[in-house]
Length: 78
Ligand SMILES: [Zn+2]
Image (cartoon, rainbow, N blue to C red; front, side, top):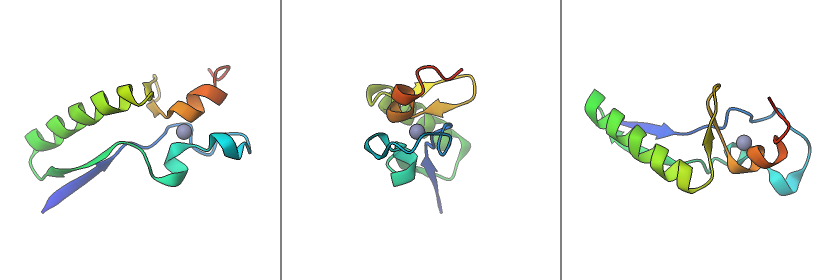
């Protein structure tokens, strides 16, 4: 068995009908990876995905991870 981990954008569906800046989670293209089924493997995978997410422009907010597109259109959010 394995555990599928995918980052989902916290601001998904809170937005604006701007199709040029669709939330990445609407297209299921957040950082994702298959982890093993141990707590250790899950932790390691989440750390690794966090690094990838930052490189791709995701930002960890108080509420959770937000994709780069929502960060752009949500500049005045919060
Ligand atoms: Zn988003």
